[in-house]
Length: 117
Length: 116
Image 1 (cartoon, rainbow over the protein chains, first blue to last red):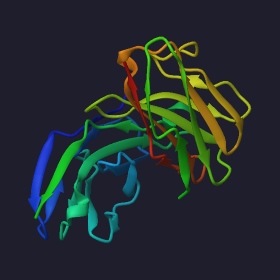
Image 2: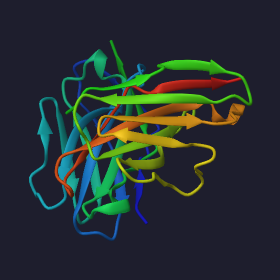
Image 3: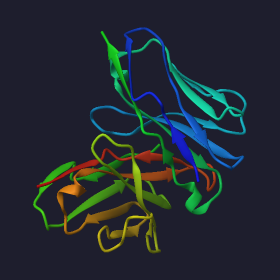
């Protein structure tokens, strides 16, 4: 079974500052994918960033970057130059690479991030 | 990515009635998924819907309660049957884009259901 843990239910950051959201996971698979999704008050789930486990280089998307520590099974999200529009619930998710039912996403419980003006 | 729409965006229903939620995507996709997000909670997978085959339901979800149709590669419906207040949730569809083992899921805007 796969598990994803987000230990920070709520966080806040001042506008223009940097914040890091934590995520740990557990899987017996060696090939898998990790994702961060954001869900603003509009409730639309938006893909923020994706990381392939076999790639050592950390993924980056503009102001969003990850710190992927495979041995520690840690996958944190760093948001630089935080903007008011970054206020949302952030979910960490894990998917294994095998086809079939194992392709389903396992989500963490979420971290509510509030960017303060 | 893909453009995914859901109808209705929200609804308020009476106990004992049924609601059908539609999910439309602007490109052909093999796998579509239906999730439930109860208030203040994370997402829980209800079922996986592949075109041309029966939907695969996760533990705790049954076809009689959540019948799913997948008539073609761009459309799916989820029906919430014989509703009770416990069914009040956001229901989201998602599609898997990419290769067989490398796909990424993209989500629709969700349907907020309130059952009185």
